Image (tube, rainbow, N blue to C red):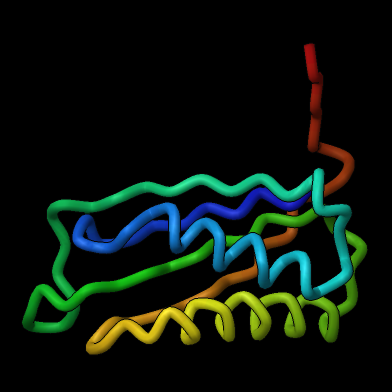
Length: 109
């Protein structure tokens, strides 16, 4: 855990984004490195304001039980790694979303 879902404009390199997001999650020290799952979804059709400016939106889904301070730290560290990529004219956003432990199910085969 967590599940890091990176939505981005198609012109950006998904591997660089995934590596940056993973690095931010690792730096939070909230998770085992082996438990961090990242995936990317590239959008060809999108609009940012009145233009088609590049964007990255990261949703980090975590199990409930983390403090607000831990969630804020996580989002800031992921954002810091995205900023370090030095994209110009690109909207960067990070959102931490809690998944309820009671309703989360997992099976690994």
